[in-house]
Amino acid sequence: MAVDLTKEKVSIVISQGSLEGIYPGLIMANGARAEGMEANLFFTFFGLDAINKKTHDHIKVATVGNPGMHIPAILGILPGMSGLATHVMKKKMEELDIPTIPEFLEMIHDTGAGIYACKATVDMFHLTKDDFVDYVDDIITVGEFYELAAGGHIVFT
Image 1 (cartoon, helix red, strand yellow):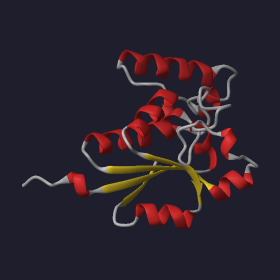
Image 2: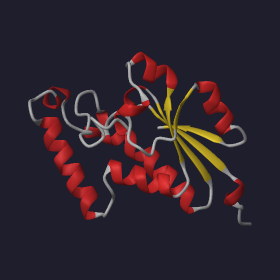
Image 3: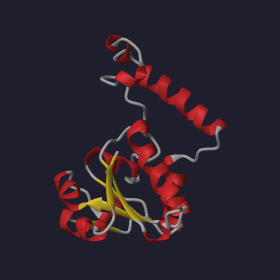
């Protein structure tokens, strides 16, 4: 029996500022929109780097404290290791035709997904709407996020 996903909604919280912390949420939001689902992205803490004009083009792979790297922790702190890991990851994603973070976000927004920044974090980091890329719909409180997410699923990446 097929499930009608056009009536479903997902709201995704992105709180990490690394490639491996941001892309899963973008992929999930894009997939939700492709299935006809309503999708909202809520960026908080270091996830704001994905929508910040100054940082969204410079997101790196986290090599320190990342057990998924499968390298000794001491190697993760070596100068240039994060840059090397980021270069390798971006090359693999380019080969698979996966868009960059800015391109992906704009594409997702253009499909009708909502893109929001967390007001408490924005205030804590002394940011304003001007600090964010143009396709950020709004800066909202957690309560407003819950209103948007009501009746759907909330996913943390």
